Amino acid sequence: MTETGGSSGPEGTETPKPQEDTPTPPQGERSSAPVPEQQWQSPSGATPPPPPPPPSYQPQVPQPNWKVGLGRPGVIPLRPLNLTDILDGAITAMRRYWRMVFGAAAVTAVLTAAINLVGLLLIDTGADLERVRDLGPAATDQELMNQMLSILGGTLASSFITLVATLLGTTVLTGFLTVLMGKAVLGKPVTFKEAMKEATPRLLPLLGLTVLYTLAIMVAAIFCLLPAIIPFTFWALASPAFILERGTVMEAFRRSVKLVSGMFWRVFGILLLATVISSFLASIITLPFSFSAFMSIFGNLDQVYIPSTGDLILQSVGTVVAQTIVGPFTALVTVILYIDQRMRREGMDIELARAAGITPPPPPQAW
Image (cartoon, rainbow, N blue to C red; front, side, top):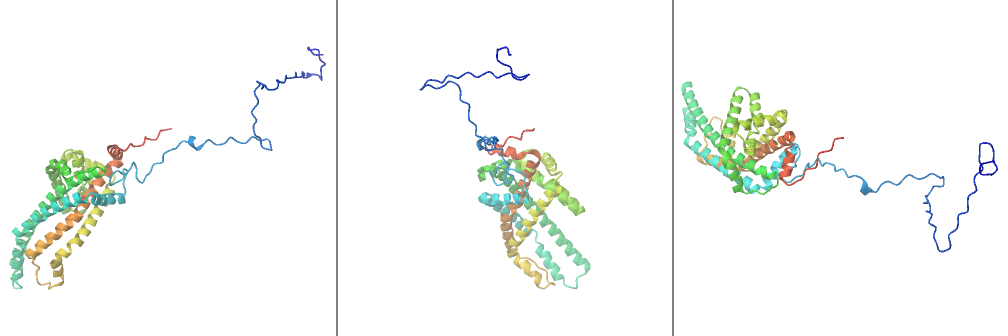
């Protein structure tokens, strides 16, 4: 017997208590008892896995676009650049700002060619060449030596005038194009007057920097060719650093060495390639203007070629055309290379993106 008075079943078990009848609600009324939710089951009785969350709930992780980096507001993408980007950036700047680039190059080329032509006319090496030609085979060795020394002196004097004119033209063009490229990278409009106004206060110290840079290369080249590439490469970025960072001349040299260190051969290779391209194009352009000198090669080798005043003027015109078209290329490549080195070493691409009004993405969170 159990405590409730019912009969006991087998030992250790109890007879289940009969369930009481649940009263049926009257018709028209609903039962307040909750109805259990019916779940679908497969024929085998297994419950299927829950469906995946909607696509809208999946986190969207932005993938970086390494082709444009932080964007391309101007002539170059804001990321570390390769060789194609650097060359394309220089050509794009020449096309987009062609009036200012070629206008400034033409002005400096005309001034340089005019100074050079005046120097060649004042230092008349043609008269010395005529005296050498008139000496004839009966001339003594001493007479030939005297005339050759006279020609050498005139050549060195005219070369010095050419060097001075080239340094002046290079300084003005480099300062102007550096300011222009600083705006072109950001895609900002700039006028000729604004660029010259910003570059003019820095031109005189920039001339001193250019003279020191040229003398260092010349002195190194006199002793050996290999050491000449050391100042050529390590100090190549001093001019854009001087213009854009507005420091002193010595600070610009130190900045250039710092930016080039560790990437010497890369910087040297890009600068050498730009120089070879410019020289090759310039030689093709100036060849028709030096037709008389070129044809003298196939003439009588016993006669000395003496250029006339017309030949010198025609050669000067060819030099102006060549420098106008090709001259800006090397300067623009140097400025872009300076910006690329700063983006690689100092994260300048983020600063340029902010200056261009682009909000850079937040850095990835560490786990």
